[in-house]
Amino acid sequence: MKLLVRNLDRLTTEEELKNMFQEFGTVQSCNLVIDPESGSSKGFGFIEMPKSGDAKAAIKKLNNKTIGNNKIRVKKAGDKNA
Image (cartoon, rainbow, N blue to C red; front, top):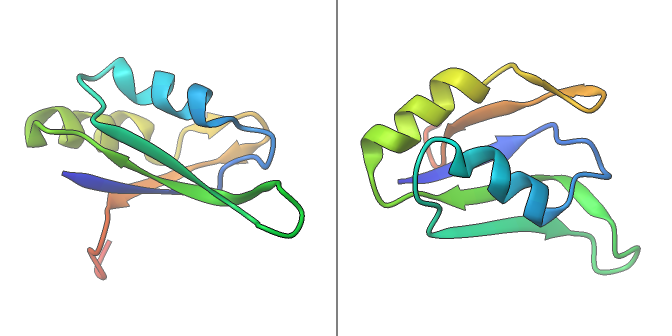
């Protein structure tokens, strides 16, 4: 299941993001979106987890959690209603 993680602190690294989700299961891929001009994070990224149960647990535990100075938002990627 592919997840969208929004409102990340701009200083969050891809490694930190991956580690956050690995608590809940296997992370297939982690992609922090980077601004090509500045080289800094755009404040969002994508996580892919092969087991939907693990992904749902991560959404439940991490959505609205404060990481750094920001309250992150986690939802299924492509889910327009969440």
